Length: 494
Image (tube, rainbow, N blue to C red; front, side):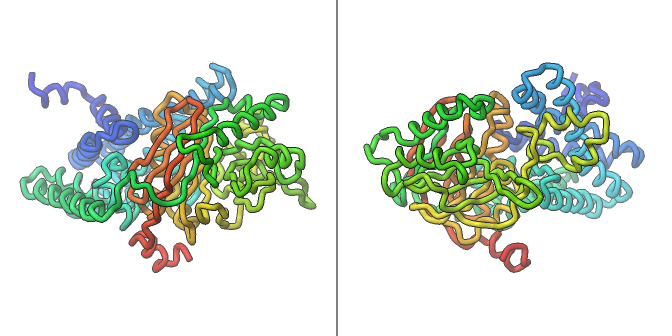
């Protein structure tokens, strides 16, 4: 029995199975040729479907295989949050199904619009590509878009292919992959040669760009310390234990390194200071008494703001000086729906399941969306803050990066420890470094903490689920990427 016969004997299972191959292109696997092959299978399946309904059904099955295999980790996050297997199975399972259906809409819509032109391949391929790319851009504009699996992210593991993100962001990477898939799907020698030419151009551009890059381990620039305290989230917020864990986090940040000299800038993860720092003089004093002169902490915290309408809470990043006072802050804009706020909470409160929905929001309080774009002053230069989820939005990160010397992503991915979500999330933020031309420092509570240069190359990373710190020389920024220039021309960033 040859391979083609075995493939056909799979029947309808071949569509979700081929969709699952696309997942192997993303972190932590990065087997991008399999991802490319998966997209080719989808295009061929749509083209040869006997009816439009059949094309849409095949696209749905293919996309569900991809989305479910890539997002399987959501129930684990629900379990870590609630410690309930039932809630993880029901709530997490429903979340996977809902997000998978949402993700499947793109290839289904593309198939529905393109199927009519299946005998005219240039038009057929162009429609599939155009619909996919328009949807990817639209999904990246809002926190509701969930741009978690952009096609271009499969090249994060290949630095030479990744460099094209400096020209058109993750969008251009995805466009090149779709064009290559469409050319291969023509099943003609000419199409295959053209696909190889596209790949050669992408690789050639990357080789030229990397040829002018400094040594990835060059010892230049200010030294920055990244702290990974490895504290379980439920412990960090415990009223009794949180002083102890704050002290332990600071101790890691002040530990003696190889050089015997403490860096002037130390980065702590999301909500590492689990207090209302601006209002609590005792916490400021606690930090100040431990901080050497001239040191600045960059840390996640929760900020409380009193208004006439009542208190508002912000997931924030602050710069803390050597007396423990927050001298600058940045409030998170892109909040996680159902994680940091409940959309339309007042309406949901009237429905039968408001309590189940509220358990998804930490402390059962809604955070408020930040409004101002602000940089954080540090001895290493002005830092552009990206708090957790914000790092997956290309245009938002580009807007935030204006005038910055470096990008700082603080996060708490403790919910996803032991799953591929850690690596998927970190890979998306590596793209932001290449797009903006800025080095990126990522401090995660339990991992994955890392530092990459403006070319997306690893400078260092720490093992997951370990208490550790990492001192690195912060690379120089590679200013004025074409991507940033295009966004300014298009007035998408100032």
